[in-house]
Every structure is written in C-alpha cells, then in structure tokens.
Length: 250
Image (tube, rainbow, N blue to C red; front, top):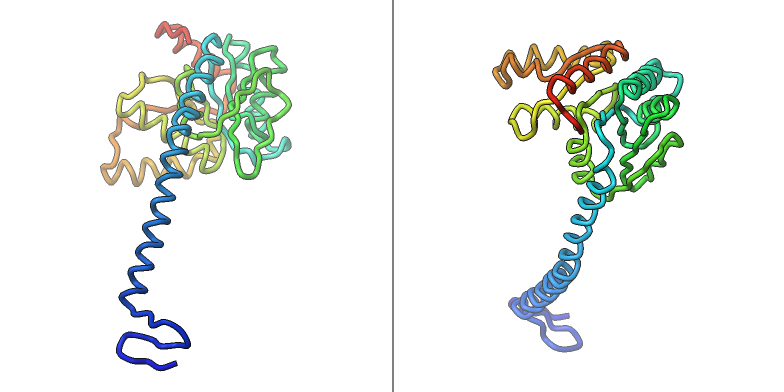
C-alpha cells in the first residue's frame, strides 16, 4: 500500500478521503430516510393505539360509580403489616359504598383487591404491560390492561374520588406527587389523598416540611393537600363524609 497525500493506493482503485466522506454521508442519509419512512408508517398507528386505550378505559370504567384508588408496593409480602392495612382499608371503603381500583399487581395492590373482593365490592385492576410481566393478582372482579403508563395514570385520576397511598417505591411516589401537582396547580378539583403507614412515610414528610417548605419550594397550605392516618375505618369514613359533603357522584 502506497500513501500519497490524502489518498490510499491499494491493489485497486484510489479512494480519496473526500470520496469516502461523501459515501458515508450518502449511507447516513439513506439510513435516516429509512428511519423516517419507518416513523411515518408506525407513528400514525401508534396514535390510534393510544386513542383506543383512552376510549376503552373510559368506557370500561364509566359506570363504576364512586371509586377510590389505592397505591402501594408490588414487592411487600402478605406477612407485612402494611399488607393487612391495605386489606383492611379496602374492606372499609367497600362497606362505605366505594369501588376499589389498584394497579392490579401483587403486593399491596393484591392486598387492597383482596379486601375489596372479600367485602363483596368491585375490585378493579388497571394492569400495565411491562418487560418483566406484572402478573395480575387473583382478587379482581374486573381487569383492564394498558400498554402506556400515561394513559393508565389518566384513568386513575379520572375515575377516582380519592387516593389512598400505602407504602411503596418510585411508582407509588409518582402517583402521590402527580396527585399533589394536579391539585396544587388546580388542573383537577381537590379530592382526599390519604397516606397510610406513618412510620414508613415519616422521613419523606419530614423532608417535605424541613426542606421543601423551609426552602420556599412549596407553601404551608400545600401541606394540607394530603392527610396521614393508620386507621382504615377513619380513612374510609372521612372519604365518605367528604364525598357526601361535596356532592361527588363518581
């Protein structure tokens, strides 16, 4: 091989750097064009899938009546004290005339669905398709499956007259803080949000008060957007009272 200037001579044609760059640009353009073609073929159909999930979810839950969504960890076992708390609050809510909605999975979602079913109420699961499949729990009277997280989150908010937040991880905190944000910014009417498991949430509440509030990131009134209680009967009764006083029908 002989090197001369910016050209390389092998046992064949001379390929200059300029020619190589041009060929690379053409390949990149062709690849981009193919990607754009895939986009224009796939994205419109994705929009239709999104629309269908919105419509099906609303239709399936339209006649449910007053409902409370209960959130909590998928990882806590039936031996956990929080499992028994979830079961108890769901049972109390059904006896107060509410349907119960969860994410339909294991752990504390299962606890809430179990309590609702044992009390003879509607026990709904809004299940999400995940890379590692989230298997629905066996205590559901109705299950609705979702591909998109944001549509599932919309259905929780639209069809709930209250939220109960049991101990959980990122997903549970996501639902809690989304509710706080929507209520704080008045994007939705205010409704009851109860955090249960005061020992579990103690550190978070202290951080909200001692850091967020102290630094001026929230106002004192924002601390009143949620309540903390470990009493299932009281939580259910308070939600019933709030719904009756505000004339909420579901």
